[in-house]
Image (cartoon, rainbow, N blue to C red):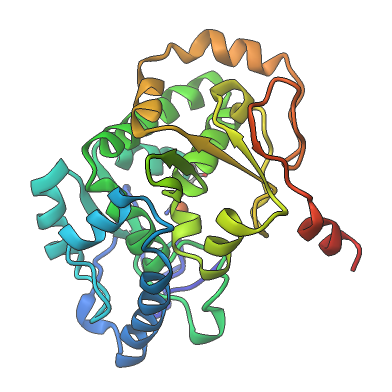
Amino acid sequence: METTRHGAAAGDAGRPVSADWTIDQEWDSYTPEDHAIWRTLFERQSKLLPGRACGEFVQGLRDLTIDAGQIPDFRRLSDDLEKLTGWRVVAVPGLVPDEVFFDHLANRRFPAGQFIRRAEQLDYIEEPDVFHDVFGHVPMLAHPVFADYMEAYGKGGLRAQGMGVLANLAHVYWYTVEFGLISGVEGLRIYGSGIASSRTETIFALEDPSPNRVRFDLERVMRTLYRIDDFQETYFVIEGFDDLLALADIDFGPIYRRVSALPDLDPGSIDPADIVLHRGTGAYHKARRNV
Ligand code: HBI
Ligand code: FE
């Protein structure tokens, strides 16, 4: 597990974690090197994203004055965000238990990693740090429809846990909030935070011939396994953010029962019922498997 600069891995002795796992951001304790890493990452992504990220994402960055200058102070960021959609950003040491995560979302609090990755980890980090969480997630929380979807996901997560179907719901989060693409008047664009915060996956997800790009379908996505350690083999494409919010009104009970009886789908597979926007060559992952 990643440790913070304060030496406080979640649950470490000597620094009890509060019940909701929040910590003080201790903004003053970021070093000039920390801010420099933020700047490097910010400048890379803000060059790539115009024309690749959806308009809502770019607008969110602008409205919240998330910029290259320094790691945002969560208090100011939250005050701005709260005016737009009622969400706040709270600091956590890293990954938090599922029920804690869902409870924050259900109450319109986004838990963001307090630490920032080290210079050797610019392109890949396992645990969510402040760049992934703030640059990747927070801009979309300024969008009212997306903001409502995230709250609904938190509430749905608490229910899914009670029903023992958390994995199915987690697949939906992964393929929308983290790795979602949207096709609209602008063409194919990124809204998923895991793509938007990664230089290499920004290009791969949109432009590489290797991955599949398939129309989003709730039951299909619920059944689809995913990769956490590499680019996705399949990206799911929504037509508008109302597609996501519509999920909040669905009674998931019968869907979970149906989906639980069906086999899981491999990340790279195409299902006969899929609406395929681009059938990937699979070349990237084939080459990875052969080394
Ligand atoms: N904790 N900080 C943090 N960020 C996440 O994205 C996160 C988490 N805990 C659990 C979790 N995500 C997922 O496993 C759930 O969406 C299922
Ligand atoms: Fe994330």
